[in-house]
Length: 245
Image (cartoon, rainbow, N blue to C red; front, side, top):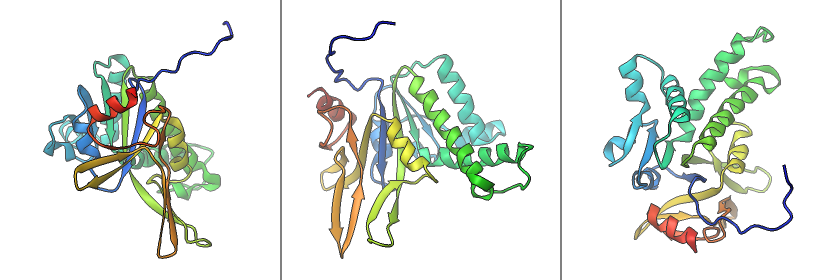
């Protein structure tokens, strides 16, 4: 190994990066994904049946094979690790994968001989063991996705958290425990999806707003300086063009 002695020019492309697209239901997140060229969409809700997507419907495939959706997802991950012929892979939605991972985490915890009290949910286990097991499963999935030789798009919903002392409303990922704060740190770009009169908008600009005495906060941003802070009336092509500067 040789340590660097000079600065290098930053890579302004977003090919191979990981995007996190957050928004309310029906904000246009899946529509954006359906427009990404050569993109495999791993569809957890069956919504891409209404879109011109190249999608794997986990629920339908699970029914066809007589398996659980998580089994199909793990099978897809193994296949992608072995050979990924796509330019992009999209998980729609990360929240659903998280729910599937909760069931697996409970199963793993109950199988642990050190666990004396069995549980039915990740919150049932002492000392946060269920949450830690769940977090480990989801983060390992992100590690696999990050290793793929393509762009990765994670689509997720947000939930609202209210500070009882300040009435401040923070919109975060709809994921349990610390996971909602760990996932954003793993990605390269966070965009907030919404609709406008012109169509679909993706914002890489976090915001603060105040209404009826309540402050609302949501984090967004990008490691690409040309995307960071931008609000794009968008298609995937528009995102790529903006990233070039």
